[in-house]
Length: 264
Image (tube, rainbow, N blue to C red; front, side, top):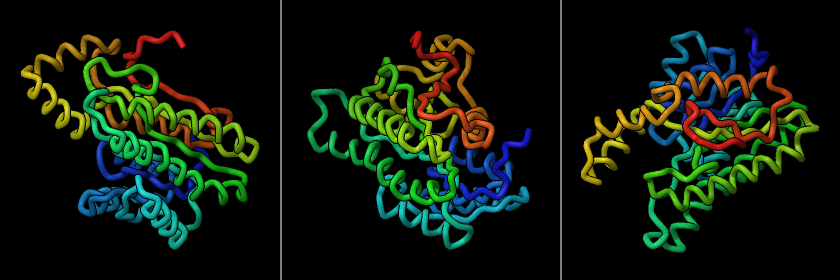
């Protein structure tokens, strides 16, 4: 299937590991020219080398995409090589965890800046050129916690600010749809990534549990009976970034194996 995005310039935020890496590779496979954005130089370089070895085009951007200056630098790198980004995948690390009585005003401010303002800065940096071209695709990798609080993890500040990011995307999508720009948010469930296993193992063991037992129980709670793979997430995002998805915008799309028990 031709997604109609060959030659498009893509920014892949958090694009060097896990789901972000799979997204970078998938977009390159579709013919995009990919700017791989992340803080860790070694992982970025490995992803860029992998894409090039597969015959794709990619350049590194060693930046923090949760920060305004990092976003501006990534966009500048894209322009230096190929032009303004046509496709942008937002994917930043979540804020500190904590329950209500464990969180401070500063924690909420930090989460607001990291989850919401980073998306504001990203939209401001890329949408003017997209408007001029009459075409653009923006996808934010969010969380199912925007729909339903996690049953076990204390994600208070993330819950609040991720919902705000979904609202921002929906609102801006309404304004920019007439310019050929689509903006969507992914509700991410459990995915088999190095980050997931590292975090969940520490969390379960800190609670006095046995990780393997908890993971087996978790899989029973997921209707498809397993965690997702990064490649499955990348396939959804690649479609949303394609010319074929031109009538899908302002949506919060669950990719969670059916985990969230919501009728709407």
